[in-house]
Image (cartoon, rainbow, N blue to C red; front, side, top):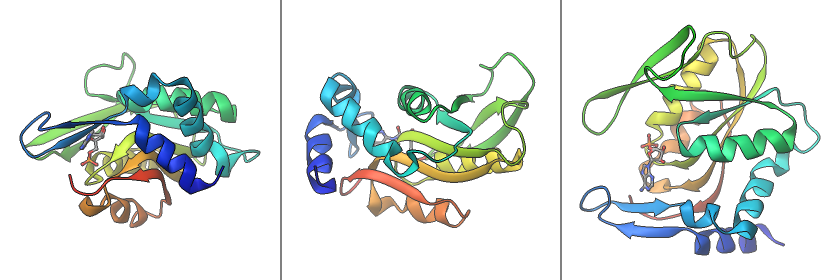
Length: 182
Ligand code: AMP
């Protein structure tokens, strides 16, 4: 299958909900892709394809949809899985970073001992929009000494410029489908 065919198949499996969670946003709902066995497998296969046979130590997934995809990718690459969570959810000692949302600030955390310095880590989430969430997660991982070798997403909203923010941190970005606008 060509990359273009895979991309079209994945795009068709994603549901778009207009004006959710607020007016003007087109919410790209990947639950329909996850519920479609063939599309779910194709998405995970396409995400891991460049790293088949490579040594990747950890997959870091961003709460919550990044956990579903990250777990599947970690299994396929025989890597560990590190959850990056909203603050207050992890039970052991954590490191934390603040990042801006459209309105105000939020914070995310990971366990302090989740990554050993120099480990090769791939960051995973379902979608990159402005890149603020993934940029904060990358900074947190890099602060702990991770070598973030890539950030992978099913969906890119290229009009919002997220990719450039991660590339500015030295992290290559892989995405499988694009949607215009927000
Ligand atoms: P950002 O920090 O702007 O890159 O936003 C990325 C995060 O917000 C991801 O965890 C996405 O799941 C979620 N997100 C942002 N925009 C959308 C959208 N249009 N549809 C679905 N999820 C979105």
